[in-house]
Length: 141
Image 1 (cartoon, helix red, strand yellow):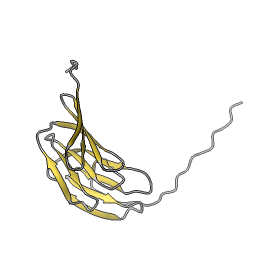
Image 2 (cartoon, helix red, strand yellow):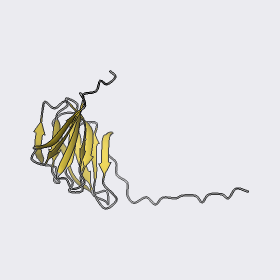
Image 3 (tube, rainbow, N blue to C red):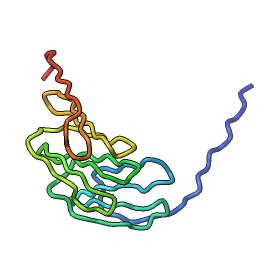
């Protein structure tokens, strides 16, 4: 005899209407949620759904990573990367890396980028490289 599994139910905490979403990231339920809208806006919502800020980004972004310090790392379509601070302010934007993806550490002190060739770069908040790993093996096109 098969014992029926209990139904899982969820309690809705809040609801928010936003523009179409390109990407989003969250650390956990106690921290804000970063939303990257298709129109290029970066928004941060607190754990209750209240908007903390909404700022335009400098180009169309394709990847977003959020740290516990609410720093938002963006990888833009042109391969450049941008860092926005916890109030939406632009900290830096760097071109010429040909980045495919990026990940912010939970502490917000370090950021890892993966380029298209593929290379992995670890950098600090000041955009100083801590180490670089270049994959010299042939990859399938």
